[in-house]
Image 1 (cartoon, rainbow, N blue to C red):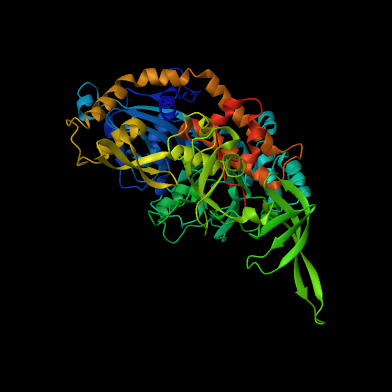
Image 2 (image 1 turned 90 degrees about the horizontal axis):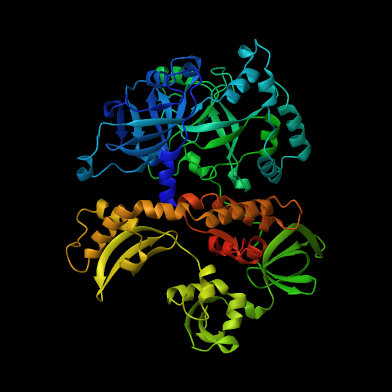
Length: 627
């Protein structure tokens, strides 16, 4: 998937240049040289997030010096050069520079090694413009909200392009308490000229050397600048957005900050409506503001920006990066007919409660707290509808930590040895573990390399699949070449380097660690050099094989479609927690083609998505139930 996404950089269509007959597309090659570019290795990723800088005069020259060029403030580009590598992202106009500045956060493929440069013209640089900001729609929107630009009446095209908020954004606004009548009223307002109070804007990084205050944004063209109001609020999100925490309220700068010089402020004030500029964090280890808003970046992501005062009033304060809140009180629940018995965390008191809905392993119930009035009498006070994990009996409270062994039986007579919290190990039936602790059982199958053995092949579809992200060390242990590998979210572990580690990780480890401590000429490690050389030679056939897997691409698209359908929940068959789980899985499914991995989905929802299309199991891993 990653290989295909990298090659896709070379297949990106260029934006059309309407005013030029000689060069109908924004694609530049012969006129560019390496002296026009500078790689900024000093800029940390959280400062730029895939966005670089371009001098205003070079930007205008690229776009033909016309009115569109004069209005432009940012380009989405691809830069290809043997000398620098391949870069992807945004370039925003910056004051006081004379070269195009490319941060490492834009680089997707490194520069050629010295031996390859001898066979290449290293001075060649190709730049393709994929998009130009501001768009025509945003220019029309600025005309509608800026009194100084309303001299001409709106064109038919401008009126036809007016759109209300998307259904997914309205759904989230409803979740955080914005009344339905307010949203319906805004729909009507947004379809009228001068009534729209939201826009789709391209994210860019701060082009003023940290002049914007941390945690703030700058959006030109919405609010009057220097009108005495230092900050206002905006509501932001990025599609796909499936959880209320994907929304955030952020202060927007409207007057020159104390840490910004006059020239930079005048530069920003010249921008048209089209971009949203994010301040950089002061701490190089901190998460950037875009990352805190629906895990976004600035290599071309577009943000839904809302400044309607009534919607903002009902939305309230939504800090970026806040933790997902659970409505569960972390209680233990036992089902008794249509009621539940709820035990408090201290285990001392029970309360009967009525079940209102069962969602797989989750039970919803009306919760009450017991209070004592002045006369010493009990009084039930309703807390509200709560959720908790369903336990059929107190026996199930025993926590199975892991499977530690199995016998060689088959069928229903099979048994496995399990470790129980606070107790000695015990043998239980395989069937019981399969029905109640399938992920624990599948993890054991992976650990013991049982996936290809009879009776265990099912486990590959349920095991927690962690992605290898880096190699920490290579060593020979007991005559086997092993790698200490970092697994995403799971820490380090030793694996067979020859059989299990991806060649891309091996090559990256050797490049990043010149003194890696292994001798590639040694008989133990000679295979590493051969494997890397073979991969460099055979990359195109491998890419062809990947792109030729039509059925796999079809199944991936089908997965996205089904997850999106269940997330929308038009039939009303899913409870809130299941809808959220479908939403999380839907977001992950959109990234599989770029980053690989599988989609997390609670086990009781798997059949809803897979149905008769069993191949979809290959894309799904079991997620923890949402409590």
